Length: 274
Image 1: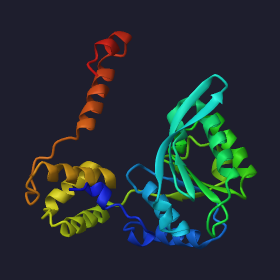
Image 2 (image 1 turned 60 degrees about the horizontal axis):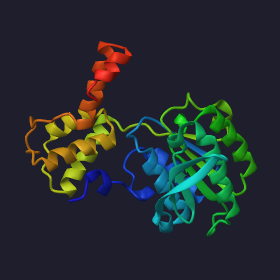
Image 3 (image 1 turned 120 degrees about the vertical axis):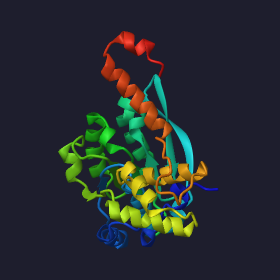
Image 4 (image 1 turned 45 degrees about the vertical axis):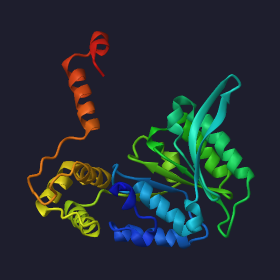
């Protein structure tokens, strides 16, 4: 039994459900031979990563989904080595530089230099580098990216994924076409959840569907995870009042928050069971 959050993820622009106006814009960008640098921003669970991957599929074809995931080593200094996970296809690289903390600038520069040395494949005359969690990049990394974007503009296009614009320096934002991806409305998400229920013959009650959407705050990923959790626990999905437990990670985070509010001291950190 596959998870709904995986099986229901769109792979093509035509499969996207929410924000038809945005999808139309992405089609135009995919058809362009000179796509600008892009900055996808918005709250988590709105579909930023999904739309980035659908855009890549429209630009490069199904071959972009033939990816390999591995850890690469980079040397920020002569005496320091860091490992970072990268997702690679023949057309693009996807990386989260903030995973290495303050060494993100060196990782970005070395990775892009490697990309620029390889000629592009196919009709699109450039590679694409997807930078995840761009809002977590250090100022040094952002400044380095600003210069790198200008230097390799003929060989590489950047697609940034961020939850907020404020942490990004203005020179970096100004070099990108900003694409805001909001979460769907409650009604839109409820309709999609009921359609998913029909496709999988789940018999989801409309009242329970409303509760799931409200508890998830219109976060698509979280709503599907909640529905998956109920399904895995053999809950009666036709019952509008079916018990819906908090997700384990939410309980964990709430417990940590309570400990922090109770007392802010090193002693409290030591006795905290987490």
